[in-house]
Amino acid sequence: MSASWTAYRRARRRSRQAWVLLALAAVSALATVAWFFTDGQFALAEPAAAGPVEAPVYDPAWMKPVVAVRQVPDATALSVLEGLPVKGRAPANNYEREAFGQAWLDADRNGCDTRNDILRRDLLEVAFTERSRCGVASGRFQDPYTSKTIDFRRGADSSREVQIDHVVALSDAWQKGAQQLTARQRQHLANDPVNLVAADGPANQQKGAADAATWLPKNKSFRCHYVARQVSVKAGYGLWVTQAEKDAMKRVLGTCPDQRTVLAR
Image (cartoon, rainbow, N blue to C red; front, side, top):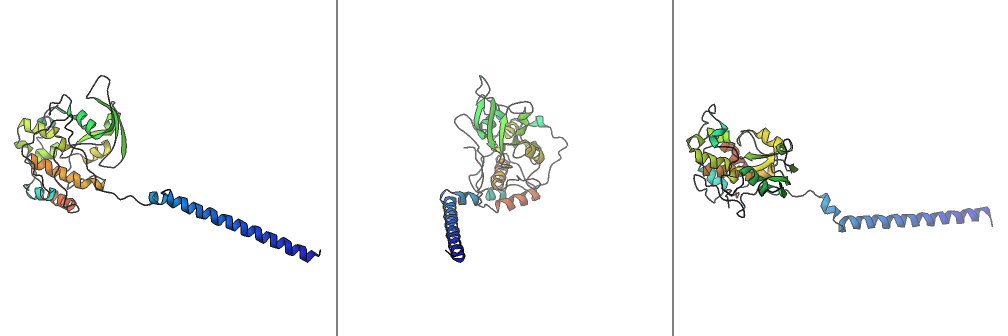
């Protein structure tokens, strides 16, 4: 057999091997693509649509309503906002937290203080302290202000990571009509579940006593509910808004004109 014939056969054999390897690679690629789509990997790669976020208000199984000064209309938050008085701020130099009563009273008289009521309402996988039906020892929740998932553990330091925020800050309420309320009405305002949400500690500290004109949650999908909650509290307790505050609220609610008021039911 000549050397040229041997070289020819060797070249043909290598060519067939190359085609087999290419075919195997193609089959492997097709299998990978099929797995990618059929096992849902493509769906996971697509961004999830961010819908509106709301927070719980009231659980009749173990909470009792806190009576506001006025009945809040079951209507769009935009329409109720239009009915709120617009005024400037009253002086804040005489504000004291004690004007709203002792912190975390059992205002609804269900046997548990307000802080533990709100933790129990807002957290998942709640565990109570030993021999207690009120004291929340641990749980987890998705913070509505930042959308972070936070684990709560009761303790001198760890408890600060989850705080109970007054949606309408008490200092802001004081400057916008709460001075004219009775002491009992102010206690109700400070302990009304409509005005309270569990929140990320640093985010709550950043907010301070700000109104909607100067602070809104970082989590934009929660802003409509947040502003509707502020409108509902102000309507329920006869408080007013500043013009800048009203303008900011209208901008938010303009993106969700069907957003309803937030009622304790």
